[in-house]
Image 1 (spheres, rainbow, N blue to C red):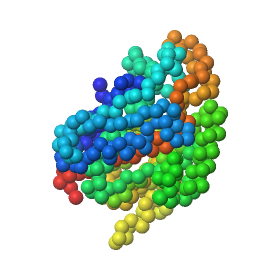
Image 2: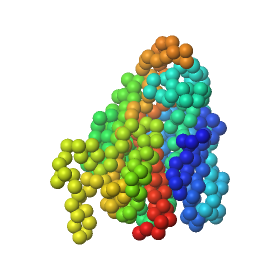
Image 3: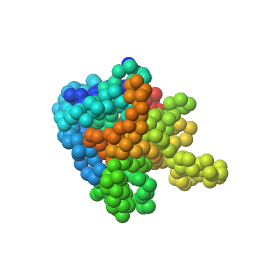
Image 4: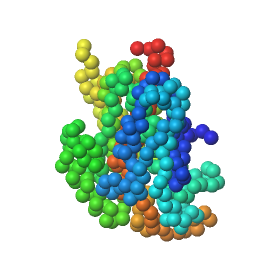
Length: 352
């Protein structure tokens, strides 16, 4: 069945369901002799695991990664890398009530229409739990990128309508919301507490930037770098829109405003977001992902059951108030996976 794998040369396949015994990822195409440790992968997984921080799901998963294959004595062997993360704090009881009901904003209806069957426990394969494998694969991808001195970082630009006003990189790792503006991070926490009390949820915007990306990555026409980056980000369940560079602002610009002038030392500005003609320019790649509110809320909602009879539901269970900031490392991972893939593809053609 297609749809569970991503990438061309650096290719990942995630597997597992929210309430199954485990989840994980198989990575194929990783070059040999890349230094990879369980501890490095674990560091990224700890940034997305539930049960930590304001507004996070009370589900407590250790998310301990096990390297089953493809690594020996701390180095990749060039063979498939299999990573396993067990589900240890599973409680499916809250979902028994909704096994015959389509929850608003979820993939229940569409999965049922496609397959004629679905795993109702925590959303099954459609759950954000699937992304744990992406983050693990992203940690490996970043090791490939680090050999080329490419760095991927993420931060929360906006949450619940509250937007960062300044960029202090040192502040990102100091607050739970990964916001580069200390004062705004405090306001975000208050907003999350307010919405949590109301039984509702909120969305936001994650910004991802790539530093030191070499010029020349990406392919013309259908495999444009920004197209693959957008696909990677849009493949994340909660992401509903992607911008690169100036994004939708270009619709209100003139050509003279939008074009990035060049000088002997490089581009004077970067409204293109680091990509022209589908190929990286060497400037920082700047992306923004619009994240929708978590659809599992405690307020009463109208829907239908499997017989298409009207039903009113109030969703119980363990849920986040916002996908941010746990989705942030997922966005970072998908960008890293795309870039690692394109870096290997560029080397394969003998390009710069």
